[in-house]
Image (tube, rainbow, N blue to C red; front, side):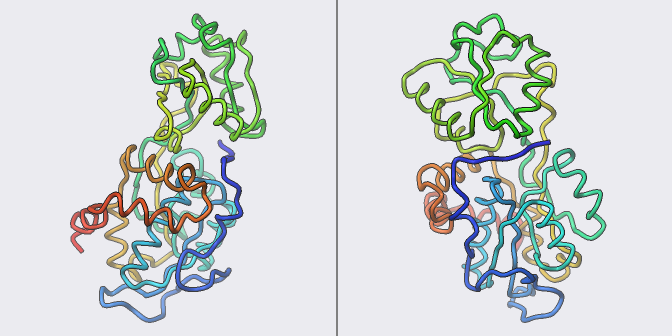
Amino acid sequence: MRTRHTLIAATALGTTLALAACSSGSGSGSDGDRLDNGDLSTVSIGIHSGWDEGIAVSHLFAAMLEDDGYSVTSEEADPGVVYTGITGGDFDLNFDMWLPTTHADYWEQYGDEMEDLGTWYDDAKLTIAVNEDAPIDSLDELADNADLFDNRLVGIEAGAGLTRITQDEAIPTYGLDDMEYVVSSTPAMLAELKGATDAGENIAVTLWRPHWAYDAYPIKDLEDPEGAMGDAEEIHTVGRTDFAADYPTLSKIIENFTLTDEQLFSLENQVFNEDGGSDPAASVRTWLDANPDFVTELKDKAGV
């Protein structure tokens, strides 16, 4: 469904999240020391490389868990490697399974060996976005107003699922064939988006939710009355077999964990835009300092 490319180089994203050195085969298993809350004391997180929301949330949970005395490790890999690692016991958790479409094949293949721990975001989708003060609100208005956007639709990488969906579905559905569809890169698209919004100019770009650009720039999604960009998806947290039994307290927290658009976009913006993605562990600490009630409210909701 989708290939993800980000503005941030991956060099800062394969680092250990916490107290122990990260390595393959670091899953906690069913044995080990337990904390006073009944949970195993070590947690390993598998992270999808290049998926900003999962990277940010994984580091957020790592910080929260460190503060509660857990030893946390992480490793980045492609989704297939992560899910294989979860079923093989190399990882305990993944915070970024998109359902019912994007990761449906993985769930069909590995779902019997994983536990669905809950949905934390329910509006993940592919979009076409414009500047907030653009004079249109729907994709079915774009063709008639293409000249206001210099007859250009700015896209990302050629191999991205978003590019394919836009080219094969949105453009023919809404009669956008006369617009120049600029297939470039995510950094180039974001640079054009920043330049246009800073200058107060109209621009139309392909984008996806969740993304930090929604917090960084004054933009809005165009409505998609024909559903050409696909339905919204949910982002689930999944764990290895017996996760809930090994982590009774953490399971309750994850079950009650949700992020609003405002929270998620500001978290991603802090990690990948404000701080440049160089130190996600420090960035989530900055975000937690700016949202001092977040952890307390989450724990209260979970009853732990």
